[in-house]
Every structure is written in structure tokens, then in C-alpha cells.
Length: 397
Image 1 (cartoon, rainbow, N blue to C red):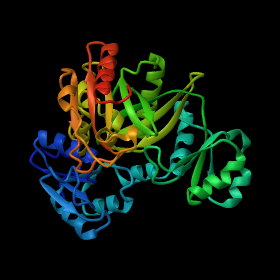
Image 2: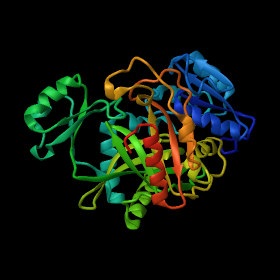
Image 3: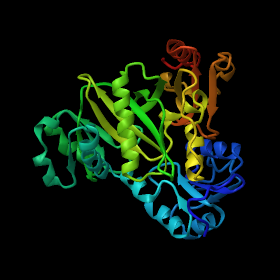
Image 4: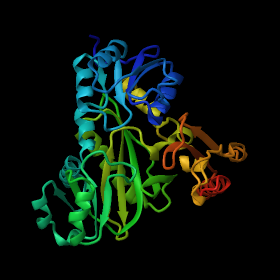
């Protein structure tokens, strides 16, 4: 086996577990740098699999498929955190360079483990999680501290984009809420006095070099990211430094190689709370594709290939707008039967709008179909461009 610290040069195969939009944008970045890509995904019609040089349709735990991938690829990553850890372990046992490793991905697969880790991390960074309580048995409910209400009950596993969580206003509602979530292990988090949300994107190479992108300020609608704006309009310089320093400390602490996103809440009193970790390129980092020297996907390629990391410098203010499947339907009138193509020509009449569509064949309400990066000479111009593009598409800015 080759020295694991030697660079993997263009012309080699890189592997990605998961064929969604993140895998697709990784594939495009890798191909632009001269790499070939192998995608493994259970679905027959994956956005990444449709453009990769090699597509393996199989379950993530299919040993024969993993061996086929390992025989082809010098390094493998994952596009989402819910890939079974055993798949990453098996690939590593077959001699593949896996970045990030399963121990890092597992941390983000379970909110209980994640909250415990963030609590221990607080002593180093002065940023910890929201007050919380773990519920795994009926008897636990009687011991929930009363000051955690109102709170948000979240499943320990498989929650994303607002799924797997219920707001609980009072202790009397907790039993029913837990039953509604199937009585699976959950975390009750105190609902904080939120001012705004941000996320930090950091990258670590196998040589322990760490770089960070400017922090993005995020707006969510119905639990799904709506816009990300950079520079973060409401963030003070001292807060941004604290957040970036904390994210850099975290990525080193867990010995992580690749792109990592940490989401934070900034409270009305100025305090900062760590929300969650995403062990992969992130929706809130899509702005880097057009507004920075190196995109988050190029950085994932560089980290996997054991190359020097790229420059994270921002070249222009930007506001990213997420495009959901709702665009294709007349959702307001309750008519979801007839899909229609949005007026992309009107969007592209805005010269500072950069359109990215994900190649998904079936639009659905709430499904991420693409995004638009709206640039500007100044921050206000970028935000105005984003609002204009949203209005063009019938999206409330």
C-alpha cells in the first residue's frame, strides 16, 4: 500500500458514498481538477451517479460493492452523515484513505453523543450547547428540569431540515410529544431567545493545516435553509473570531480531515450557543462556489487527495437562495398536480445571479432542487439582488 501521506494526484479515482446534490457538486469539483469519481448510492437515479465515471448502485453496507469501490478508489468520503459507520470502517480496513473517518461521522449521527461532546468542548471554547436533557425511557420524563420548557424535542438520530422534532411548550405535553416521535431516544433542548443563526465552515488537511471560511448568517423557513448571507450582516467581528476559533479547535480535537460545518445560535443577550455539527460540505457553504477563491467542494477534494488546502478568501459579498421543489408547483393554491418549469431566463437576466441546479428528476414540495448565489459589489447590493431574484421566482424574499 502506498504511503498514506503521499498526495493522490489527478487521474486517480476518488469515491463518494451518497449520490445526492452534495455528491454531485463534489463530483463536478473533482472532475474539474482532473480526477475520476466513483459514486455508491442505493438509488438508481442519483444526481451524482448520473455524471460520475463509475456508479455503483448498492446498499451502503454491501460488502461486495464496498470491495469494488476500494479496488478502484484511493480515497473515499461521504456526502451525508447518516451513512453507516461500518461502511467507512470496512473501506478503511481495505486500505482506502477515508476522510472523514467513521468516528467523526458517528459523532454527528447521534444528537446525544453530539451534545455530550459539545458540553465537554465548552471548557476550551466558552461555547457550548443549549441546556438539554436526554429522554430514553418513560421514567426519564418525570426528571426533566422544569426550566427546559418551552423546549424542542428532537430525535437522537436521523433528524435534518426540521424533521424529527416537536416544540413542547409545557411539561404536560412531553409524554404525547415523545409518543408522537415513536418513543425513540430523544434530546429535549431548551428553546433559547434566538437573535440569528450562523454557521462556520472549516477545513483540515491530513497535515493538520486548518483554514476557515467567513461565517454565514442563515435564515430558515419551515426548518429548511432559505438564505445564507456573507459577510454575516448581524455578526460583530469579535463574535466571528470567537466562532471561527471554536470551530478550528473542534476540527482538531476530533482529528477530522475534510470540510466540517458547525452551526451556532447567537442569542439576543449576545451569547453564542453551538447547535450541531455536520461532517461534510454544507448547504450554507454553497456560497463559496462563486464568492470565494476555493469552493467547499474543491477543498473536500484537496483534503481527500492529501493536497495543500486552498485559499478561503471571499471575493465578493453574496447571498445564497435555496430553490425548493415548491417552485414547480402552485403550492399557494393547493395545486401540486401539475409541475411547471420556473422562468430561469428571468433569473439569469440578473447578471450577478449564479444558478446551480442539481439534476433531480422528480421535484417535490420541500425538496432541494438547486440554489442561486447572488453577488454584489457591496453587501446591500448582494441582498437586494437576492430579493429581486426571489421575487422573480415567486418566492417571498
